[in-house]
Length: 403
Ligand SMILES: Cc1cc2nc3c(=O)[nH]c(=O)nc-3n(C[C@H](O)[C@H](O)[C@H](O)COP(=O)(O)OP(=O)(O)OC[C@H]3O[C@@H](n4cnc5c(N)ncnc54)[C@H](O)[C@@H]3O)c2cc1C
Image (tube, rainbow, N blue to C red; front, side, top):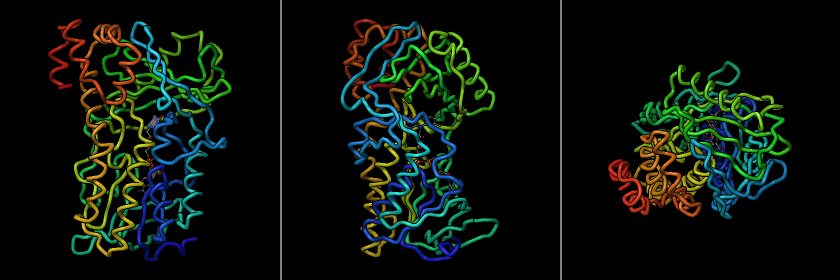
């Protein structure tokens, strides 16, 4: 297979996750000679994900549910306050699916390959090649041998802490305050947990906790996980202990359940990096921190950004212009579309993180399900009016972060 390496392509994509394969499919369909490399020996595994995607997001990216990977249809979410008050959030767009990501990613790759893209797995990109300051390919290792792959454009879709973007001089670092460490069990044997709803628990008495989730996958299985600010191993342990305590506290759900997988991973929740395109290179998905800052969901954002990047890359290839000026159109498109909502949700995250459990409880008491639906869309201006009337104590915080 290594004859696919040491060649010249129009575009080389590093990373065969949702972002990389979405870009590859569009590029290949437009006749752009595209190679995707991934360091994993199996696309999709191991998963680092709770596997939830929304119907709204699927519509936006043109994804149709396929029974091969769409494991459980979801009708909405139930959001629980620290004291157990619950709010149901249900709209057509809030519904969605919990997917089997190991299969989902392979399907995305297969679609790209059927469109004409080439793939190499177990191929580690070690850095970019630059000539006169312009990125013009990558160095990669496959089966212990080094290879040089030249291209007009490199797309870094290599996930959080992107090594490839960094090797080109971009700052993709994650300050601890903007990094969630996720710890999750996939469990079987759950009971008394509505399988058509995502269950999201806030609070839990530990200020650092972002939230705990139960994302049902059908037949009594679910992803049960926790997202916590910061990346220290100590906090990784805290996250696991906190999740274990939560499981113990809910015997009605977990008494007969056991883990069938453990998943860990980091989530960049601080909004997108400043520069997503340079001469000869674009950065997409988690590599560009294109993640929902509230719940860490990034599959759809990654796919949508990658689709925009691929459109721009294809037209740049056609025009023979791979300069930052040309590729920047992608960055601008992203900032004007998904970027607006992500920025708003970042402010909301910073506000929520400052609240103690008792504040969160009071905050929940003021909200209706309709309010919650507006908030998840990044529309929260109305909140300050509600807080002014009912919770003047946290109004200064709201003014600081939400206005
Ligand atoms: C615990 C947890 C739960 C989550 N739950 C959800 C959820 O329910 N819904 C949701 O939408 N999002 C969720 N996310 C976030 C989601 O997983 C990511 O946003 C999404 O995977 C981003 O896709 P991507 O293609 O940008 O990156 P990735 O999926 O990370 O793909 C990057 C790819 O690049 C490859 N790669 C990396 N470096 C190199 C290299 N040097 N050379 C070659 N290949 C390389 C990797 O092997 C990988 O295949 C969760 C994340 C975590 C950690």
